[in-house]
Amino acid sequence: MEQLHTGAAAGAAPGRTRTRWMILAMLFAITTINYADRATISIAGPEIKKELGLSAVQMGFVFSAFAWSYVLAQIPGGWLLDRFGSRITYFFSIFLWSLFTLFTGAAGFFTGAAAVVVLFGLRMLVGLAEAPSFPGNSRIASAWFPTNERGLAAAIFNSAQYFATVLFAPIMGWLVHTHGWHSVFYVMGGLGILMSFIWLKTIYGPREHPRVNASELHYIQQGGALVDLEQRGGAGRPAQVDTFACIKELLSNRMLLGVYIGQYCITTLTYFFLTWFPVYLVQERHMTILKAGFVASLPAVAGFLGGIVGGWMSDRLAKAGYSLSVSRKVPIVIGMVLSMSMIACNYVDADTLVVAVMSLAFFGKGIGALGWAVVSDTSPKEAGGLSGALFNTFGNTAGITTPIVIGYIVQNTGSFSGALLFVGANAALAVACYLFVVGDIQRVKLVKSLKP
Image 1: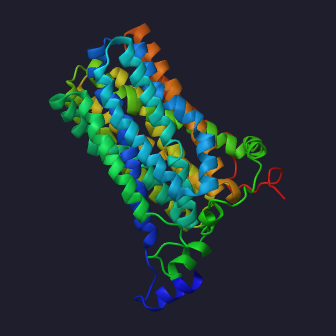
Image 2: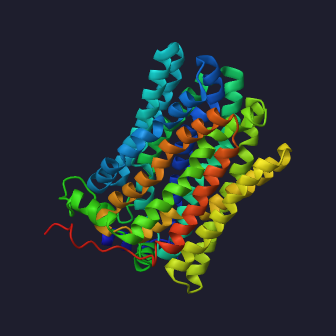
């Protein structure tokens, strides 16, 4: 394999290839589809609520269905990534979540309680299938990117969650308005199935990719990329860690525990945006669903830009000689402080000001969304998938709690004021975790859970 890369380099133009950025572009595209499929239920939510006659609490449970299975499947998903590698595991993940998204449109053929059960069950299947996605992103970034580029790489694929809203919220709003809520699921599911096969033709490990030359391989390896990660994850290779002992060892690490809890708080903001934000615009701000679809894209633009700024800031600090701890923590803390500004929406009436404040809040959320870069920096090389899965388990537990808590707040108070306070408080707690719990950020070396 080394001869292959050397030969490719000899016949190539001077300089190194930039294949890693093509890999990142694919991660960005797939993550955009991933978050668009998650958001289908929120865009279609007002019409589903109206057609099926659901209460706010019932909608909260429907919104949370995805996260229940997504959280429960994180550890198995991480194990699959470490066992079979990112390329093939992720392919089946994309294909299956897209298939179940497509099937969700058929919930409209049922009525009453049966429709709710079918809708809930299919959203759970989507969550189950999506479980390996973000640990897979982190694992691929660890294999392809040197440390001083990893912050930007993680910020770019993570910012796809905002780009998904920018690109697809207006489209999905138009689909609901013109063709009914079922059409959203048919269109997004079909697009995802197509992308799964493009993924299979595009993604390889650094040593196996036909377009990488020896110069790029040397550059990323010398910079800290784990270029052999996918080779160790191949089928038929023995596990290098005891899974349950590894989970215990990871959870006993104070730095990782602080990162995990911080991610729960940060993901609370994400799930407010993915589930209740369009309903907030329709119910609290009295917008039409068509207008809400377009308005929801404006804070998403700010979140996307914030994500790029946060990754750039982090890598710039690292290249300037600051420690990994400083270069990762500074953007996270600044971003979460800005996110707390959403509470100000409780004290303004003009829709323009609401959108401006929400845009500032999600710009901050984008800046602070560097958790996956921290996971790539800290995960033990023998268990990158498992570490990412634990991180995502903590984070997406917020996908269960946030929709339900906000549902109860809205139903009991008749207002979103308490909901915005709840979300803002989570941003403050994330700051506390990174300042007072995490400590120095460094790669974990397993001791107790390695197999001989």
